[in-house]
Length: 466
Image 1 (cartoon, rainbow, N blue to C red):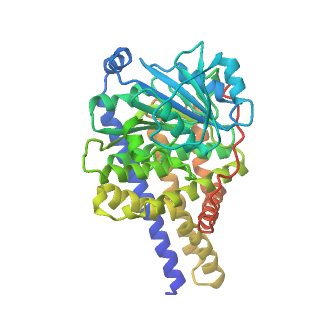
Image 2 (image 1 turned 90 degrees about the vertical axis):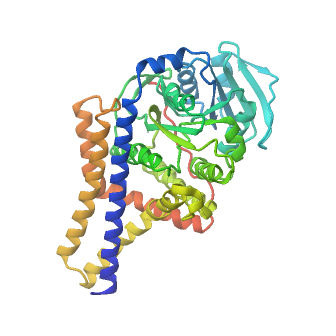
């Protein structure tokens, strides 16, 4: 058998292993969610919501030129069901009307507010407090990227728990209750992640979700499936295996003391959330005192975030995500296959390197090899069709399993029409959309090794109103 032919079958075996691992993660995630729901009661959350002993939270919202959406995001944050919290919005060198708009919308006045600066940041130009909402603070500072804005807010925060979200995020009203619960039950919890789903298609007025819905475009629908498969169920499974290495920047709750111990977010990161999560895992295992060990996934804490529905913006976002993943892995490469870091080093880091960072290169190589084998007569048309069919069926089965599991939760689709649209998106994903995604990630991989470190094209926002 020709060497190219053998290589093609080896790549197919790699793809089967990849899909099998993802399926196992999804099934483990489903088991965890079922176990979680068995152990909670409505009365428990009512006690958390009413008790003055519940740990207060500082919600941090970094933003840059987000005048179109930031008011709705803040109004949503101010409506959360939680006994004590503050909202700190950081305008990171915005050149639009963000600060002026917030001043007008929330009756802001300039105040003197200082904090202990454990982490160096760009200069803070002013701190403002709302006369209408005493728990709302706006910080204006010199531009230093998202991570620097988060670090500046941490220095000014008052409370022991930090909830970090994006400027386009809409939180479920009880999200903080669900995320705070693990900290109250176990003092060893270091950080808690939640479910992140697309907000496109939701009916949102003044930061309040009125009704659910799905994105209108096929590109948006494909991301809806991806978020259910990879960003929800698979990450719950990774959490169970102590290998959660990417807590989304759209929804993170962490102890302030630990955030400062780790050194805060790294301003040089292209995707600061995955880099911070890997560094957090490394810090937890490196320290001698093991009083902060748990990275928990709260499956009922839900955040909705805007996804790109234009191909150019989608390509820029996924290109940056790929470069950011490569950067984070190589910056923390000492953890890979290192037993000192437990399951994180032996399973999590190798998984992210072999089956996340390099998957696109391997899979796209398979497509090229199939064409070469067919043209040169190394493989028959029947063999190529078998390979394509296996790849297609495995992908469809994994996505379908994830969607059907989601239909058993409160995040299920609002109508049968939406459900069948999801099924259609699954069936056509591997007929062009998936290959486009692969190409973007391969380009991002090569650009990373060529030294590209910029953040790419800024996404055009849609106002959080209907």
